[in-house]
Every structure is written in structure tokens, then in C-alpha cells.
Length: 150
Image (cartoon, rainbow, N blue to C red; front, top):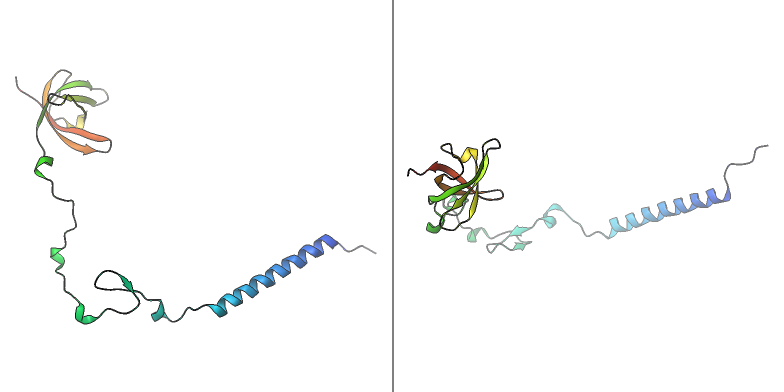
């Protein structure tokens, strides 16, 4: 006659598994019974006239009408100092094969990146140019670059 494949260790593990399952289902039932959840109305939250969350509906007499066209959602207006100004500089470096270079501004001696797409005329190193600046991903870029007539 063959011996049973269930060993003592297997039986103990199975008992522990069943006990855990029973405890888990018992805890689940306790949570269900003690939950204070309710109907849909008790879960709603309202915003009062001051923007605070409350559990009471707003008073219709305090309701204000807002003209939708008076709401502005946009980029803030530029101040006069931020307006685009034409700057003068010299081409410090320009690589025709790669299509980029740098312009050194006369007033501040700062260098600005320039891409071939920002050129209005063909330029080479040493040319004096007019340009404008725009904010790029990595800093200020020169655009609208054209030679200054001597």
C-alpha cells in the first residue's frame, strides 16, 4: 500500500493558509459593518463664496454672475524694458557646415547662440550684424540676424 503524499509540514502550511484566509475575510466583514459611508449626498463637497470646501450646498442668493469675457488667461504683458530691441554685435564664430555660430554683442560683450534659421543674410566670421534676442530652451538665441552696412 502506498504512503500518503501529505507530510506533516504540508498539513501545517495548509492549516496556516486557511487560518489566514479566515482572518482576512473576518476583518473584511468587520470593516464593512463599521464603515460610516453613506448615500451619495453625504459624499458631496461644495465650494462656498470664499473658495472653501463645505458640506452644505451654497446659498443661491449669494450667487454672483461673472462675465466670462473679463477673465484673462494668457501670457502676461511685457513691460517696456522687455520689449524687443535691435542689438549690434560681431560674428565671433560661425560654422557653415553645421549651421550655427555665436555673436558677441558690442555693449555687454556677451555671446549669443545663432542658428542658420535665424539668419536673414549669409554671414561669416568678423561681420558686424544687427540682431534680436529670443528665449530658447537653453538660453537666449539671436534671431533676425543681418549685416550692418559699413
